[in-house]
Image 1 (cartoon, rainbow, N blue to C red):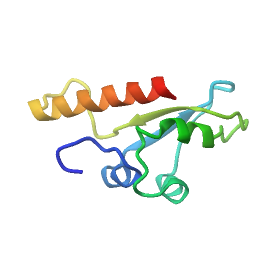
Image 2: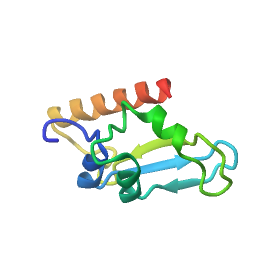
Image 3: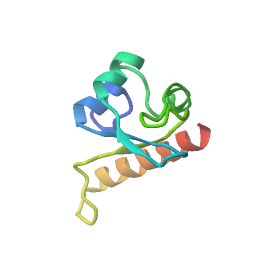
Length: 105
């Protein structure tokens, strides 16, 4: 995973990223257990390229409504802190990939 942003479930586990789902009906937000995602989709499942599949298979844990909104969160990232050029480019690429995946799902 070196020199790129986390893409697979295994990458998310390694970097302690969070996957948050939000229900469009009841507005409930919940953090998904990455080990459950790994068991369901596999360690090499690409979280960006396969976001549509992930949305189709997940449901709100509160009301059961299908196709929740999926967000990725890096708890280690701090807004307003100085970062290297490489880190800045990586974050920009990750943000672009996320937006493309959301639009396609």
